[in-house]
Image 1 (cartoon, rainbow, N blue to C red):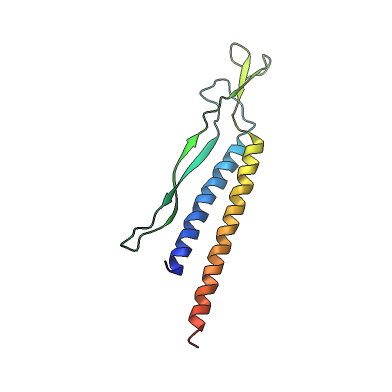
Image 2: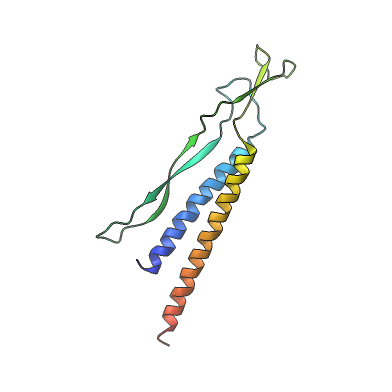
Length: 136
């Protein structure tokens, strides 16, 4: 593995963490939205990552890729408020299944992982620059 592969791996990881941060921001932005039916209520979304293995006989790629974004299967939260204008016939409104504590922890984790990958890319860049200076 050469240092260019390290940059590719760090780049794919930063891209994946960026998707994770965006889905977390979307979940936090919709945490207080309400709806009159379960089907129309916002559901928390989470990205699914997959490792890319390096091919043994070619200059294969390695890193992380986002396989997709899935909705949480946790139930939405019904809230009895018969006077609310969006209440259904039974007097319930529905809140998203977003857990603010989990989302904040996920955001901090994604942010730290992103920063770590930036440091890996910077270190690889410095090592490449110093390797080029060896001949001078």
